[in-house]
Length: 599
Image (cartoon, rainbow, N blue to C red):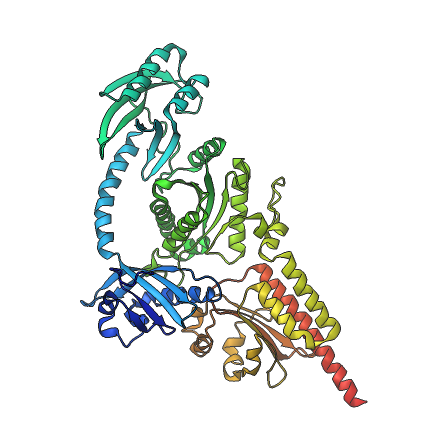
């Protein structure tokens, strides 16, 4: 976004998203909307996505600027909508944003046509059930793999001579056919002509029963470089036909056309055992039971299939995906040492899943949570990596879902891998750091010992622990603000007409109100919705405070303004406990004040 002369529309926006500067393509893009905010050009269904992108930018306002990417639809001169990849960045020395837009509609159409052709070829290779290989004479590199639709499932990926020595050393080739195998190896290295060899071994089934292989060599030239390609088929002893041991029902999930649990587990275990630089990703569709209950199981199956397609398209040839059961997936991603690239894959999966079936589900967007562990970083044992990734997935769920977590012990605590069951204590401490909880509990103790004069400090510590934007306490018949974080909210006025309405009161359960997405109030309680929206609120937790007779005498509210989010159970428990302690302190002080006046 640094080159203002780029061929893409690039410019600056003020906080209301009005264009205040840009290159020529930017002004051509804006056209007649030059005096309107960018929201006016966005497809109505994408307005909230743009708002969320802006909110994410504001999160980085005090730190190093980071790009927030989103895929949006903007109106064109013909009144139709084109698809744009939008990159938005908060500018620290300017009260606004920098934006770059790339029109990908035509690219998408072209890629779709090419992808369809490539996909058909990959499907043919998959259906054939044969293994394939590739040899580069220039550097001696050899790769033997299965084609699983859009995924390459590696059997080996190493120097050819190293693979050849390993096959002999581990007796993966029948000793009786050693001469035929040696002839095959020399033919591959020379790469002079097409040839076919037959020999026996157990190379493709990882050292199990002996098989008969028919291997065909085909030299080719690509961009002036020689490549030796080949088909490695398993043939049945009696008929000579290709065996289909690797086909659907054995390693392939019939619904999603990715590996099934057996296939992905075997593949992952082999990768880790070889010391490959891979990440283990566990992915789960959020609230999938609600999807099935609301829209029916056939639609649930369509969601699972669509999520599998998203995963395959995002990771491409950089990894292999499998369905381990129900709505849960495992992905083995190569070259996980590059954390930035790893996050790009995770972000791509999460964002693309969020665009699925919007015309059907509306605001009940499809979302996913992902947990990640890394070989040679977190462990060298697949079973431990699997458990770490699974616990990181659980932690992502606890944090509010629709997010990914790359496990880091310094951030998330040490998961006790020796125990069979999930250690909930460790996982909860990973979200609420021990240091932050200690500071909060200490300030809460001060509140009990010293009184409501400590309330401001308690609210600040609580807001930090719960990662919310602000907190306030309304108390007394007039609902005066007696405590606030930040302090600028002390002058806020209580809207009795809205918050005392019976329909609003009915939203509370056991004195507690949780609203993860304020959009839920837009039509049912428009007055409250617009009141919150004016304040920029996205999510709310509230708890009533009561007098000694049990009548409502105020409430505590915490509000998240940067993003729509759910509140984990532990967050709700911490908030509820604090409110009850505060209620007791305020009643105690009222009693003391009354006693002092009587005397």
